[in-house]
Image (cartoon, helix red, strand yellow):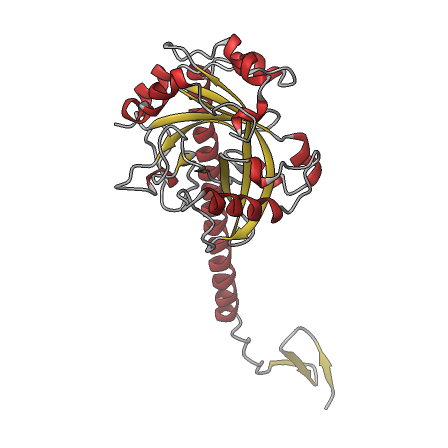
Length: 340
């Protein structure tokens, strides 16, 4: 018997062709379907995650944009000092004008305005109500708040334990550190000594008068540290407090900070360290004060007079009173006019 292979599954026997049994095909289709289904599920999940992340990122960026636009609109209406924004080198207190009526119409908790030349810090300041001291952590100047997972601008606010006219020995303003560099983010940037010393002038404006402040220290402390203190048992206790904050500066002042013994008024601007559970606190002292007239405008002569008596702003020995006696009653009554 001879055999010759022909087609698949055929064998020739002595000239005849017969079919032979072939092995059944392997059942591979179900396995392929399972693999295809698994990769499809992974792809769908990846697309859903990507779209959710894109939506979240877009929402965050939109919130940042809308939040800053809201404050830009407020500044356009109320901070009437375009020359100071374009050229801060020759700014005087008389150059800085705020429309307090416009601000109070938007938010009756308004107590001031902070401006740090050369930075993004240019915002109204409110005073947190004693019944809700953390209100402005999440509420912006126009009363808006973000969602629970969205960034919130909040509003720079004077502590409710402080007098609304900044007449306490120590006045503390808090503001957020936003990742887009807005609000008080610049204060954290002052951890760089060069940045700190290039931006030591801080303007604090109020309806009854304006201060030109100079930073004397940048403290970096734990978020749980009890650094806030607005009342002191004695002048000696206050001096000790100020000396401690100056000595704890993480940057070296150039020129050096004045001795704590000649400082009788202190201003602190606090923001969080976005990388750790800590805070940056910019400590400042006044070097110039100018009272405002009945329209809220700082008088040029008043500013010039006080510029020649810089020590009076600190209330140091040899200087005149921090507040002009004729304006003292008006400034003392500011809280009644500002806080509703």
